[in-house]
Figure 1 (cartoon, rainbow, N blue to C red):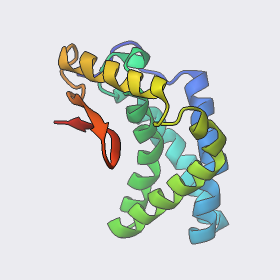
Figure 2: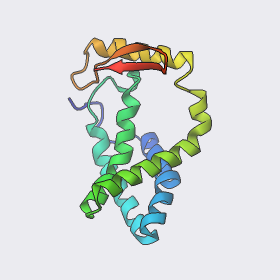
Figure 3: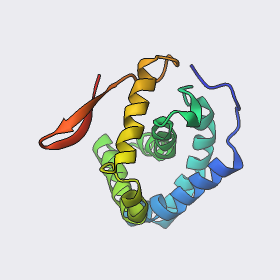
Figure 4: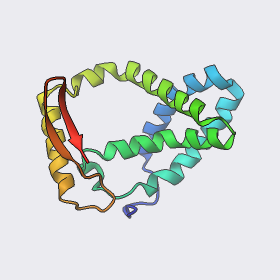
Length: 159
């Protein structure tokens, strides 16, 4: 099910995409593919993003703790689509996305530490997300169970 709220990307979401693109993707692309190709690809990626974002499946919007995963996918997909169309091997596209994730982690490390998966409030949020998913309110939502941790891991998921 595609969410019906809006067929347009909000200015705030577009700003977030632009910041993500400028501060994270641009550097990785320029190092690998050069300034000119990067400029063309990033311009095109914005248009692809604007067409993809409104098609995110309805899983409850921002009320669903896991919604941010779908949003982030729409931030990553435009450049992957462009690279695939350019004939870049899937492995190289994956490497780009991996390097991009590493850069994002470095940039957002202070924030990541504040919302650490090790924190009790994060564990509570994941338990609540699992409980909500089991209600199957939205047909396109993930459904999973929370698994208490022990031994080598803090917690996990089933399904």
